[in-house]
Length: 142
Image (cartoon, rainbow, N blue to C red; front, top):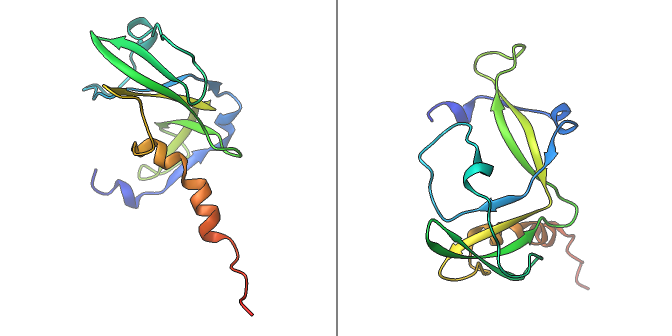
């Protein structure tokens, strides 16, 4: 939305204490809904195959076969599910974000083939290692 990028975003760190830990699934679809939904009522996956990091699993969703892999959040990091809310003490232009839940892994699902290194989300999980290499000191050459 126009103008939102310019307004300050404030993360309510105190909301971390009340945050639950969730199981996340990234599905290859778009949902035309913005708001609460009883997801557990409609998505209770009967996953076939090992449910461990890096192992390929399968599931059927609305008659389509999906292949997935569980991906761990990089060491030293924690995944956050954020929810935008309204805080009475902030101006109407400020955006308040609270931590709804945390996660240590997520299952990424694709149609036809299991997620691999070329999937954008898996590339994003590689960023901490790349960033460490970019910012590492460069030894002087003699």
